Image (cartoon, rainbow over all chains, first blue to last red; front, side, top):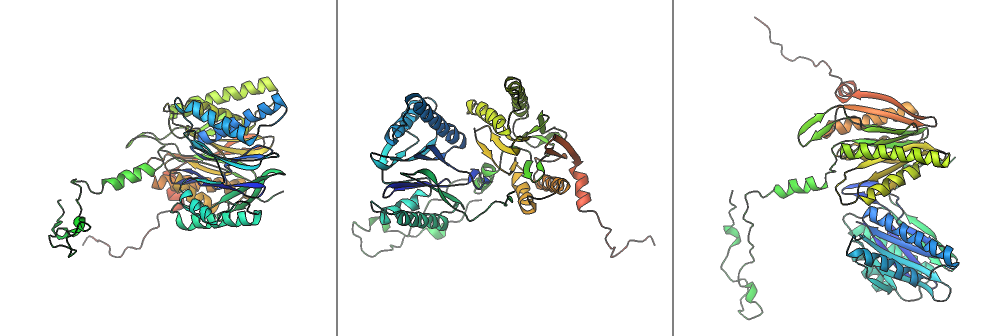
Amino acid sequence: MECVFGLVGNGFAVVVADTSAVHSILVHKPNEDKILLLDSHKLMGASGEPGDRIQFTEYIQKNMSLYQFRNGIPLTTAAAANFTRGELASALRKNPYHVNILLAGYDKETGPSLYYIDYIATLHKVDKAAFGYGSYFSLAMMDRHYHSGMSLEEAIDLVDKCITEIRSRLVVAPPNFVIKIVDKDGAREYAWRETVKDAPIPSA
Amino acid sequence: MKLDTSGLESTAPLFGANTVLFDGFKDVPSFDVPKTNDFDGFQKEAIQMVKPAKGTTTLAFIFKEGVIVAADSRASMGGYISSQSVKKIIEINPYMLGTMAGGAADCQFWHRNLGIKCRLHELANKRRISVTGASKLLANILYSYRGMGLSVGTMIAGWDETGPGLYYVDSEGGRLKGTRFSVGSGSPYAYGVLDSGYRYDMSVQEAAELARRSIYHATFRDGASGGVASVYYVGPSGWKKLSGDDVGELHYNYYPVLPSTVEQEMTES
């Protein structure tokens, strides 16, 4: 099952997601990127039904671009999180989206932040959060080892601890993970943690 | 058959003290066996639940020279084989192919509809639509019908300005970009042969043989796949059908019947 987790450190936020695209017992794709770059300083890691996940996150991404075009300034992370929650909430009693979201962002005024948005439109601003079966292992790990103001090395070390724990204890553990961070220099991919590599395509 | 559970019942107290704490533990722990005749039916149900539902085998993969698309040709309704000659590779336009898995009518209709939309795009924009664009069009349409019972598991394969493209699109709204996919009830079997034999730099003939072999092995093990293994190739100048072999004949090609030594001959004496 899909594992997404994240935490806030000293001047940055990190989001980690597994990269298996699964259909019942089949893994259709081992390197599917589930963390979307919403804009230059925001990341949205999503897990849930595949159609909903892509359609909803792209919808949020396009609406954020639209706001930026219309108003000349980008949304803050809090505003983006509340907009996302609002969209989930309005659809909830009609045509619900089955997506769980971790939204991480960096604002110049307020620094890094992480928002937990449930598929039933719960919204919480948090320091650390996790979704999926992996959360059973990563939440306790993070509770034990997290402290506010962690450096990047400490945070990545904690992330690796969580990934190792998920890999060793979860019966259907996903083999590959992607780590993305967002800080004052923007949102970007940090690293992949792969144990199963796809057949290599030699570059030209 | 009623199980003999007399061994599980016991009236001897496990703990000596009869205090309030131990009230629940007076007897040896025993449990009620469910009253049912079919103890193991749940196993069959579990297997049915995880088995991919769409009765077919289709596959496609990108390699150095382009894209290979292959499929079987059996249509089944439960245990009845309704046809052995279904065209499961649909020609959307001269440079794009779609595969059919799931409801035949759904796949045929929506692929035809996609072909129309692609042509309209060409007329409106004076250039061919990319494989990315075509697959997104189809994915959005299928997403809007989500939950209404459409059954489509398709791969869109084509060659556009950026080179070979392959997308998996299904009726739950999922859309995946990739280099190797197999869809249908025979797909786990096909994946095994495809994954182990795959190399990026293969010739067209080698790739076609890999595809043919994967389909054959899937039809061998999966009852809902069979008929004719068709293999198509999509290159820079469009698609081309490479072969269509009956899987029964392929079986004897790969595993010919060798005359075995006769140990004891029956003679007329």
